[in-house]
Length: 138
Image 1 (cartoon, helix red, strand yellow):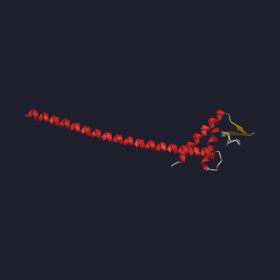
Image 2 (image 1 turned 180 degrees about the horizontal axis):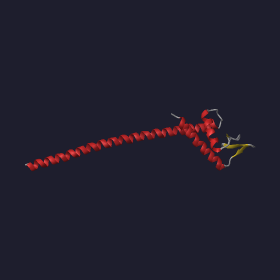
Image 3 (image 1 turned 180 degrees about the vertical axis):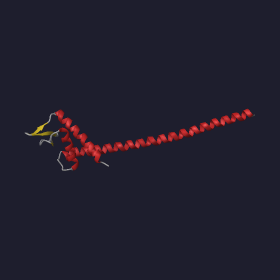
Image 4 (image 1 turned 30 degrees about the vertical axis):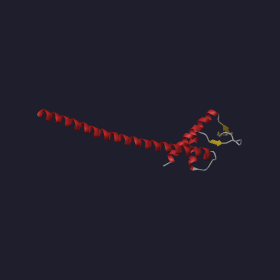
């Protein structure tokens, strides 16, 4: 009879440990699911913000910069670009409606850039614009 009582105690202790481990595991899984849900929310917010930043930057590039709008954000973007290039940048659309041209203001007048340099300056203009919009957004 004593052996049976000892066996029952051992069995109950084992079940108690298993129950404690199961509860701990359940709490861990709940916490893990909550953190994953929070990560999805954070990623979603970041993606929405990035999309909004890109949309505003595109609007600035397409309308304000090319139209030479007097705007402190546009002026700052162009100042940064000119500081990096080391020369005054002129952006213009040809009268025939062609692609945007980037010109370097030289002593003899504006000079057209080659295709590679135009692509490099446009890429840098886009990067500066994105950074500026991202800085100024709440």
